[in-house]
Image 1 (cartoon, helix red, strand yellow):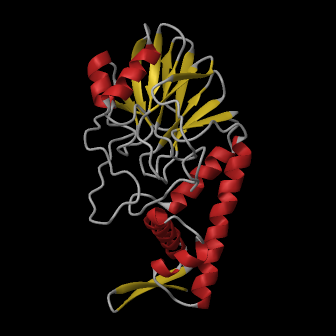
Image 2 (tube, helix red, strand yellow):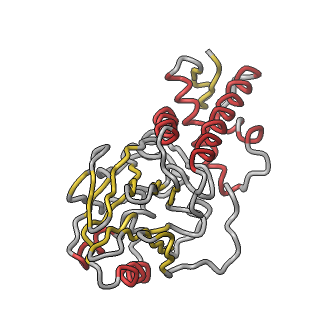
Image 3 (cartoon, helix red, strand yellow):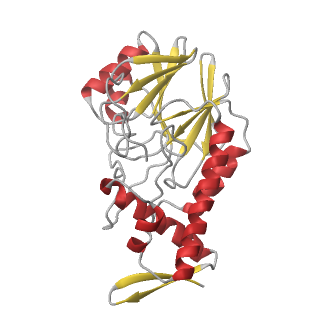
Length: 294
């Protein structure tokens, strides 16, 4: 993961990215959100949609409403339900009377440590979009593109009028997405990348980082990067059976200590995928989970 760039960041300001798209940055920077979560306001006429309203922060909600201006919000759309993406949906819906539309609700109950944001327990959609379903407004159409992997309920939204794709956390403008079992699934994530690679979107607007103007090139590189990680894991297991923690020093040299849990979860996701494909197995030795090739 890349380091957070120096300030100033355009927090709370509406940036016009293209005729139908404004971006508003939430004040929640971290090693996992970069400079913060980016909310998008789509539409330039009488009505708009808000994509990924972000954390329930009064200043951020006020900034979203300033970007909306005199338009009517007719949809609040969430790509997934991590706490940096969807908690502002409920208060924004109360303010605007707009329905919450998009991904299915998901609350993961687990005692495992998490390296990313936990799930939003307040998310209650009025309408769940299936793959290919659309939300329409004045001069804009958003089509749901199912992209499970980062989370099982993850959606992207395609803006048909411009060729833009709002990619949430599936493809980001600053780092690869973290895939955390048991809900995150590396096999699903790779299949979703292949799905995007086959599309003809012209630009990606992600929840974190700059706009991606060469999406096919980036996705091709991401698929290659994941395959490289998989090959590293197979090679290291071939040398010696080992616990997940023993993969990290070899695979992530010079990694920020704060990101070690994310790296361990990513390796675990790869190992589970390899196990499903019959290429890896595990056993417990003295209470420690050990992974080896099959």
